[in-house]
Image (tube, rainbow, N blue to C red):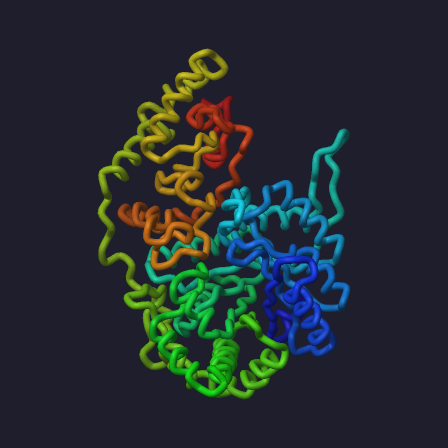
Length: 508
């Protein structure tokens, strides 16, 4: 996969495992592997990890089977069901089995089951996983009874996902700020989420190029059946965008004698040609019930259409009503110019709560603040004494009222415009939004809660500081600090915020 992306246009085919060890879905995947092996037109099979939050056959074991059949495999590696120890263990197993290609993602929120909804984990986010993979690829240093042991290097090729198909400014910019962190953490290729807007496909390609990243970008082609499109249109498949205009076309197409199959395969072939013509490094083809001969048709027809790809741009004009674009429209091509959209015409209101938190921060937690040094001295006096309990209780009460504090002890309020990702983001994302939001609303609580990162973006933009959302990587929560005072942990150099600011217990 790594070599192919440097020399040719890559095609991957996404397959979805089902429940059970020997169900039809598993047999279909193994049959697909036999068809793909030795053909050369499909470079790799990609296997999803419990899409929709429903349990299915474990992708690592299925990936191992496919490797034994001589097929290149990309395993979707999600964070929703595993803590950091299990993630490390799973990476060892994948490396031993020869499964090296990973698409690292947050993952869909767990779905309800007959026994009730499972507990989501989200201990690591994709940035943390990428950091671990980078360390393992370089020779992981682990504690031992003597000197630290350096493990044999792995050779994972890890990619990430990004969704340019976001409607609101803060929603879209959150995706791009997080992508910056993913690239800094070691992402080696990028795959887009599902969408059908040519300008958005072009936009993310321009964003990657303007950032100077020499990283392959792979476009997502999902072959839309009417039923799946309906779910996407109703926001029942998080992160996948089907607009009303596209939905109306699918309704007309399904009236045909083939129920719209020819039209949807042709649409996929046209998108293949469009993406290759734009300059994408490859395509990621998926779709419910897709057969190998369908994939071959998309490739062959797509290659036939590539020379005339500019003529296809107008056929993928599916904007979200009132949607924000990072770059200005090029009326000549129907795509984008290189000129960014003006984002500074109007600023969100600053709000009393935002003003209050900023004042509190600058007086108590900023090194130049009037109460900063007294608070550090007070923390030294209080730490480990009977006063520590009342201080911890008072802090928790204040934060419970203002941010529904979960008392993790490793506070991330400074990192997210004084919002708490541990209590107000269902996926506990500390480095940026997941890909599941829709029109600014949270994936898990649509029309009930705004995405936390959209709210944080507005708070920061009110002061012209929205770029701060991507300025540094936030480490995972240190659970050894749980139910302790994050104030004391900050002032005494024990939490991640103090380390970012280069504070330690000996510095006053």
